[in-house]
Every structure is written in structure tokens, then in C-alpha cells.
Length: 201
Length: 429
Image (cartoon, rainbow over all chains, first blue to last red; front, top):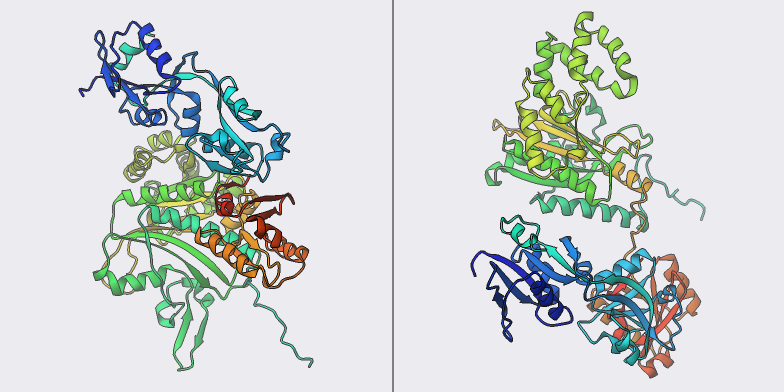
């Protein structure tokens, strides 16, 4: 791949379609092919990379991609201090701690000593420390919602948009750790062509 | 049955109980980690040396070297510092050592001194040195190591003050201060913090002609940033200090941690180039680290010349400062889990739990007797063990285990198979 500008976006998931829509709104022209890992714009010197959500900050942080579209929740978890170009207004969701409906846990302080399953261990650990709550963090890659019903956890910490998935598992939100939306981030390394992309915004 | 020996220790020596040792070891380990990050290895020298090796190296302080005749009538001395034994070691091993040679050393030294507050007869020294190079990169590296040590220990504010012996010689020479009076002048300048500029002026009147004093002080106590200070001294030999400062910056040392201080007078008769001292603005305890460039480490032991640069960290002062700034609050003792001894029948299961925890690198111990639970918990409390694991017949039947968290008194029952992951994922807040 030549040394042109690259932007990393989600290969699958809730931000993918809106990310492409955002790029089209900048009048960039491209054809999306199923399963392709990258595509080039036909009217602009830009390649779109399709990556795993959690890898995007890594690529942008190392300057392999010049820009990225990623959820704030991922950036918070990776503790990557990338420059945020702008918030994009889509993919809004909340990172919440949720508990079974009939749980003895009534307030965040009741989490003391408990087990919390999450895919966001760093963000959760920071929240616990800030709120002086000691608890066990159980890191899971996915399907976090079922951990309480299997007695693997007393609570979960996970993303929710509408709360439907939580409700389906008999869970209710206890507290919100952060609100997140999609953001455009920029690599910390200078590159001449960056400005030409930024001028499209 | 009346004559017990009084259980006492010599003045100026100390016993350290587990809690104190946990703190000291944590701090020592953090300091070592920084040294090792820069590629320093450690060495060890004997506690006892031939008296002739140590005597005659400490000037006035020779009388503070502990000496005795051993059982074979040999004249023996106890290690008084780490520098002289290091010089002796280098003189007899330099052909086998990589050059430049860098080492760290943390060990006990003994001084037959009169004990006072903060002055001990037995204490730790903590040194790093680089020998066998004249390069100022060594000076800059040591400055970086000092900064990293104090940052790693959690100090938000510290100042590495530095000066150049060469520069001072050049300035004092230009003001026609004869070499034999230079040390006196520098000693007087060092008092500026205590007696102020007026006091220094008064003191200098005893040493220098009156008309020399105001212009000299104007040069030495120029106020401004490091760059401005160096620029104001352009007509003297500033090359060394300029290069050192530039290298420090290139090495990534933040200028806010550095201060060019021409009143610094450390080890006048010993140091020949850059000298440094580290101060903590938030704790009035004096220098917590100091050292500099010297010309000839092994002069008394061999004809080879080894120039070097090194600093000593004041371990005890650092401990006091950290205590004062509450930087040692979170230090825990070794055992994290006490597995209770419920009764004979459940003991094998308790051993199994204990072994599983230890296999996962969780420090755990078992209570030695099937005492009342309250007594076992009291023991855990006194030992500051955060968790007590209880597994009686009921729990065994259900394949569960109960964890008592001592800080809150809360109990939590979970499946036995989740016990190690419970502790491994635990976030202490």
C-alpha cells in the first residue's frame, strides 16, 4: 500500500455503517466490497482500513493509520491519548454497571467485595478507585450479560444503547460510568496530506 | 532465675519490625528497578576488610571507622562507606570488568559516630557510579536516573541542583582568588540559604579584598533561567555546564526538575566536574541525593586512573520524607489470604485451597490451630491480612467457600472454583 492517507474504521459492529455514511457525507467516493480489509477512495488519495474496534487506537497511535473513527468507550479503555478531531454525533451509548433485578445491591457502594464482569476492565478499575470501592473485576471478551445468571458475577459493566439487552437478561442499570459516541481521532505524527483531509470537514 | 540479659541494642542501631521492613523493602525495590532499567548491575564487597584498606582514606573521619583485632590478631575494619571498597574491588578486577563500568550498590555501613537524630552507627548506603569514561553523557544519565527514582517513588516535586567545579575554578581564578582560598570562599557561598546574601558578604570580607566581593556575588548569584544564567557567564569556562544541560534536555529531563546553583559546594576536595544535590521542596530534610564527577577513583590502590561520576541516595532521609508525604500508606505485608483451620475433618480441604492459591502466586497462609473463628480472624487482623477464607462442612458440601473481607467485615460466598480468580481480579481502592 502506498504512503497515502489512511483512515481506520470498524470492520463490523454498530459504528460501521454510520462511519461509512460520515465519510460519504464528506463527498468521498468509494465502493464497499464484502470482506475487503481496505478500499481506496476514487476521488481522493485516501484508503479506508477496516479493523477490529479495539485495534483502531493502536493503529492510529502508531501512525499506521492517520485517522480513525472509534467509540469514546474504546479510547477510554485503551488509555490512548489520541487527539480528538471532532465528535461525530452517532453511536451514542452508555457504559453502565447493571445488576440483576432482585439483587441486594442497591447503591454503587454495595458493590464492595463483589464480582463485576466486564469487557472494560481499565475503565471499571478507574471508576472503582475513584469511588473508593474495592471489588473483583472479571474480564470477559463478550456475552457479559449472562455472567450474573451463571453466578460468575454479582454485577456487570457493559455498554448499552437502549437497555433492551440488559432487560432481556433481567438486569437493570445501577450507575453510568460514561457516555460515549463515535469520534474522529488523529495520529500524533505529522503528515503533509493530513490537512487536505481535515479541510473536507 | 533472676538474671536475664537486658534485651537492648546499641545506640544508633535499629531493629525493624515487619511493617517497617515491608516499607523499606518496597522503596529499595523501586529504587533498584530504576537502576536496573538503565543497565546497572550490582556488586557486593565484604563487611570486614583489612584495616589498612580503609584507614587513611577518610581524612578527619578516620576515627569513625570501626576497628578491631580478629581472633587471629589481624587488624580489621568494618565497611565505612561503599566507595573505598568499590575502588579496591575495581583496582583488583578492572581487567575483567567491562569498561566503562557501571554498578549500583545498596548495603550497610558502620560508623563509630556519636548517635544523634538522623545520625546512625549502622545504616544503608545506596550508590550508583559510572567509571572509565569522561563523557558527559554519563553525567546526564545519572541525572535522569535521579529524576526517575524520585518520580517512581511518587515525589511530585524535587529539584536536582547542579554546579560545575571547573566553572567555579574559572570564575574564582578570574577574580584573583588564590587556589588555597577558593575552598573557603565556596564554603561561605554554600551558606547563602541559611545566612542570606548579607551574611555571605560579611563572611567573605574575612577572606577577600572588599572591592572584589560585590562584582563576584553579582556574577555568582545572577537570577534567571538556566539558559540565562549560562549566557550571563559566557566569558568563563561554561562549556561543561552548557553541554551537560543540553544533554539532560536531549535525554528527556524536564527543565522544571533542574536548577543551576552556584552556591552548591559538595565535596570540594573530591569532585572535579559536575556536582549535584537533590532537594525536596516539600520536606525540610536537606539533600536526599548527592554526588558528582571525580578524577581518580583508585589512585590509592593502583596506577590506572579511573575517572567516574556517581551519586549516593540518602535512603533513611528518603524514607522519612515519604512517610511525611504519605507516600507509604498503601504498602501491604506479605500474606494476602488466611485460610482458616476449621476442624480436623476439613483440614485436607483447607490445605487444598491454600495450595491452589499459592500456585496462582497469591501469598496465603493457614492458621495453625483449630481455634475459634474469632481468634483466627483476630490473628489475620493483627497481621494486616486483607482476606480470610472459611470453608467448613456446609461450604464443602455445596462446593462453596466464604471470604471475609476484613476492611469492611463483609462476607461473600462464591463457588470454590472461582476463589483464585476472585483474588487475582481484586481491585484495592
